[in-house]
Length: 76
Image 1: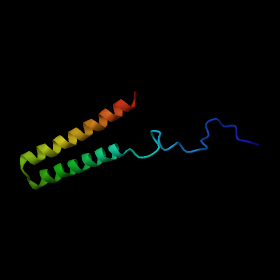
Image 2: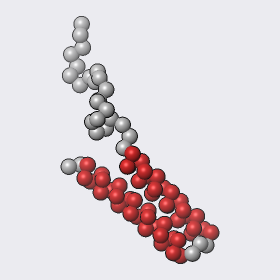
Image 3: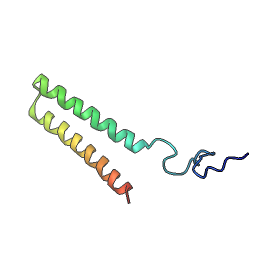
């Protein structure tokens, strides 16, 4: 007897469709956020110059903002 389940996925999605593979931009943005937050943490604990903390914080904030904007734009 054949399966009559309409929700069963039998074939993988085509390569060109969204969700078919990892999103390179998202991976790079997450890497940027994690690395800049880590650099900010190290600069804070080692007593680095204040401009370095501000620069790392700005990069972290920019990366997080871009991730949020991409997330909100993808909901539409």
